Image (cartoon, rainbow, N blue to C red):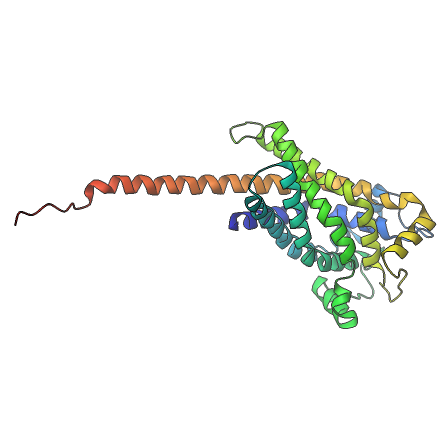
Length: 310
């Protein structure tokens, strides 16, 4: 289980660095005011952020996922691996159940982390250098929210996070399992790495497509209240208002940047985790074999007790 946690940490850090700019664009598109939209689409959003806020604008709020996603991936891969061992049989259904349980447990960290990330990403929109920063960093953001709203405040969006993560991670691990089996990702296969990258990337896309509408509502609820103005009273009110103003297309806002991000991030994460586990397990097997060989070689040198004639 320790190897699963370590692999998750490494994979998580790699994924954050690759995908955070796409996530910033996703959040901006999801929560922008439909009456006065700042961005016309994914490319225009990228272009505007770089022009108005510099390249650093795309990395706003990265502190929170760099701290949180590393632990989240450690929890996800650790819990999923442990759940599979408890379930016994490696079947697609068990992969889904193990993934869903991992997704549920990591929400404790995921929800506050994404709240801080969303608030930081929305801060200073359109400004190269924010004139007045409400939050200094992700930790300061959570501390200020806690002081003002308590535990309930830092867990804003928890229900929608659970609704997204539980089935989302089930689909995630199920898709990866099915694809790696179909593609035949064996250690001796010379094309194993490209196959792992493809399987991981497609798993991320499948996971996001399965729960994306919930993510839109979650982002809106977590961004609500910035500047002291609360627009939504709850999940259903957010759904109702969003549908009334923007129609069903509201549930696809930011989807393009999400899918563009999902493939490289999850390809990197899954390939890193799988290769790390293979490498470490091979190392463990070699060390066990070496120790067994040494014990066999030492056996003839051990003094043998001779029968004494009394």
